[in-house]
Length: 86
Image (cartoon, rainbow, N blue to C red):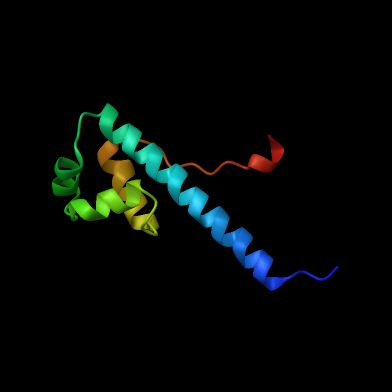
């Protein structure tokens, strides 16, 4: 079976976008539950507020280092789930 590289790329890009959106929404929810606004969290993490905003809106390709900082300062675990078995 031949795979069209353009359709594969669109699928991967769509998946990456959806992951960034889901992660950003989760971080925003946890941040709000902890009582921080974006400016306060940015100051604690020593990053720009616009970086927090871009990550929460899915417009920034968040590195593992940033994700680890969020985990540290907001007090949550980073886990990987195998959704194929659910």
